Image 1 (tube, one colour):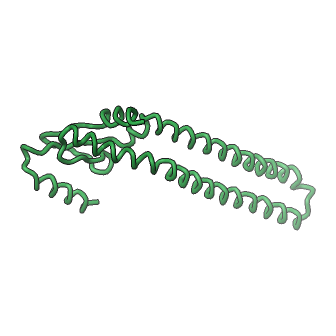
Image 2 (tube, rainbow, N blue to C red):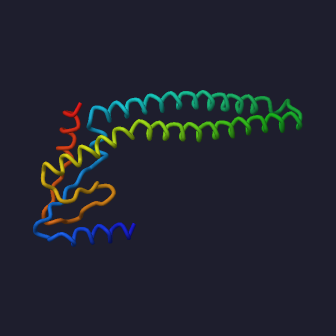
Length: 166
């Protein structure tokens, strides 16, 4: 990370300070603001809620099994208690495994859905940067510019250009 900061500093100083116009773009804001980004977010939310519902059903089954075990604990033999506890433990482990699988699935879906969006955003950032005569454009979350004598935030222009480009 420190190397990246040094590289950015070197790039900035390689241009003459008075002639350099630095552009910044908040890609997260673009993703949240453009219509296609909202569709992606809605689709991810729908899929997430579906998976959460499935996990909730499993949690309810485990909770019910635990309650039943507590009710039956006085009448069960030691061997039956151990068997029941092992069964509940297996259910918990299976739920944890399923939860991790769902997280991976959601992350893969997010990556798949956002990739074309990010590629299009990159193209539009280049177009807007050229139109606005910006020498360098940085993504704010990756390389936050604390100070630049000549700095221009292109985020809103990128959002407008993106939504017009359909």
